[in-house]
Amino acid sequence: MYNIIKIAYRNLIRQTKRTLLTVSIIILGVISVLVFSSLTGAFKDLMIGEITDSVLGHIQIHRKGYVSSIDNLPLNKTFNEKQIKKIKEILDKNENIEAYSFRILFGGMLSNYAETTNVKLVAIHPEQELKTLPLLEKRLEKGEFLQAEGILIPDLIARGFKVNLKDSIVLVANNKEGSVNGLPLKLNGIVKSIPGPAGKFGYVKIKDAASILRMNKPEYNEIVIRLKNLSKLEKIKKELDAEIGSILGKNDKPMFEVHTWEQLSPFSNIADMIDLMAFFIKIILVVIVLISIMNVMIMSVYERTKEIGTIAAIGTLPGKILMLFVTEGTMLGLFGVISGSILGTILILILKMIKPVIAFGRSDNIVLIPEIPFNDMWVIGIIILLVAVIGAFGPALKASKLEPIKAIRNS
Image (cartoon, rainbow, N blue to C red):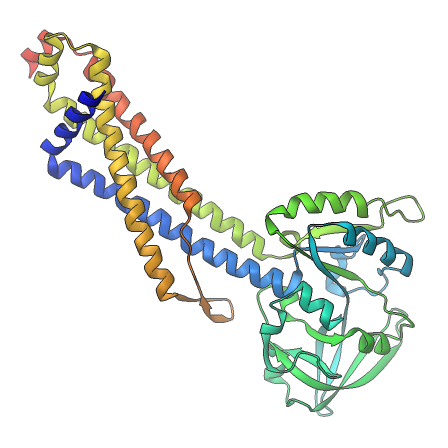
């Protein structure tokens, strides 16, 4: 085997320009895939982190039918005390859950005594919410995060609403019976909006929401959950589906439903599109490698017909000839993979130092911090080596079947 590798290497060196060109094509393909995977992976992780850690959490629990009517923010699909106690028991005993927070989502009107605008709000317990959504406080553009009595409004409203920090504004809302109530609140701060409907909500404290909605006790309509490990998302969802689903209503039907962030956010579709693009880029790389190596091997067999006939005539077995050409193709793929992986890693490290900034939606300063995609590196390497073997096999098989006398005469 050592002799075959040695001869294969010498044969590649003999055609230096062709070998370098083929290897260069493979290197460029590997670099392109690694850098693309790294940048898209960084973008996905950043956006998923921003959405889950500042708005949605990893998992949410609602009454049946709430999500399908969430645009109306219904106040009649809430949890009672007994149900809250039962759900708390389920969440507290699950070791994979890091934190959870109870919320009230509702719509209302804001007035600065000169003009009025619509607003959607999330009523929260600030301490619980910040444990569950650790990046929420970083969305604060101005002011403080509900340390005192007041309200946080989204930047989209603040831009067209003439109001300053600490100004008094009136929040008007309908409760579930339809009666209207108003509550004066101070503007504590302005929060940055992020992609997705839930990223454009304002915030108030639970007790203020209970007051304006005329609730004797808070009637929560959403529970947000943070997991210790996001990779266990589907596993934990199945567990919660089984346990939360055991809470039955009057007709012995499940009263609650569990949703992951992917089911609630439109960004999950964008993430799927990114994965699909990455898949097609890998397919293109495979096709390029296959065509390149097949072309080199076909030319090599054509140019070395006399040589093949000679070594066959002196007793070299067809299997050895086949192995020789397959080895050459494999070496081309191996050189390309190793060189491409090294250069791709260096380029990714440079990009990590530079921290490229891109624009997405309303955000024009998204900083990407790419990481080396080791999983993709291994997958790409193995695929290219397999494709190299497949690409070399056809011409190699043809070379091994050449009859010595005909090969020498036809050369």
